[in-house]
Amino acid sequence: MSGQLIDGKPIAMKVRAEAAERAAAFAQAYGRPPGLHVVLVGEDHASQVYVRNKERACRKAGLAGQVHRVSADLGQGRLLALVDELNTDPKVDGILVQMPLPHGYDELEVIARIDPAKDVDGLTAVSAGRLALGVPGLCPCTPVGCMRMLAEIGCDPEGKRAVVLGRSNLVGKPIAQLLLQRNATVTIAHSRTKQLGDLVREGDIVVAAVGRRALVQGDWIKPGAVVLDVGINRGEDGQIYGDVDFEPARERASFITPVPGGVGRMTVAVLLSNTVDAAYARAAG
Ligand code: NAP
Image (tube, rainbow, N blue to C red; front, side, top):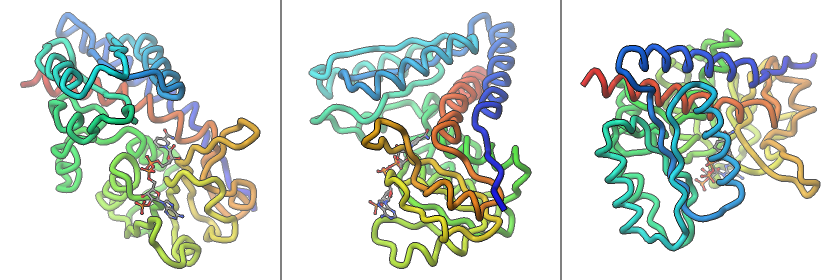
């Protein structure tokens, strides 16, 4: 058996098209498009590429996107002041400070400064708390994208064993919360987890969000499991690889995301949709 590929491209296109449609309706109703403001501190190459992709995606979906490119030596105080400015600007619906910040910045303090109503990355304590309580709010984009992929392949997490590898605030914890909300029985693994292979073998749904190429071996995959590979690892050949040893895992999975071309496609699409959600929620007061 060879598992079916979950192609991120058409699913992400669908999410983008939905966001574009809702953005147009918002503009019609309120006389301006939803606005996403991205703050890029310094010149990290990968961050520059990510931010350019976000800028382009905003334009295509009819959102008002603006990137604030500032020098790495701006300093914590002035960065916080910029976040304050965006917090109070009524035309700004979403604020995203591109991580990681250069050495010397306190990322947690910067995140904490973002108005939760504009927290389209879902990283503030308020957003994380809402997610933990199961009340509506803005959720981190990649986990929401993973849930959308499950929905698109008709995989209902209810009653399933889900194993999430990684416990970051950006991916691991929020995806675990979302799976729990959908009544999966969730286990979260991390760097101190023992017998990782045995745990993964129990998973009907496996989400790998670690950042280690081929950590998840093919024979760890329960036959018929759904495998979502969030990992992005650059090989010595310059290519991008996931956290899952793809070919052998595919032999056992029912569905599996490729890397690249899988989960990675979803993140920016959900960012657009979170921005439109934030715009409507703010407009509703
Ligand atoms: P992160 O903050 O570095 O977290 C990595 C997690 O993996 C940590 O919880 C860590 O455990 C755990 N871990 C490390 N080694 C492990 C091991 N041997 N076994 C089990 N768990 C282990 O990374 P992140 O931001 O969550 O991102 C994870 C991966 O997803 C990265 O490759 C990143 O590039 C990728 N990513 C992709 C997208 C996308 O759009 N596709 C978006 C975001 C991130 P401890 O907590 O114990 O240290």
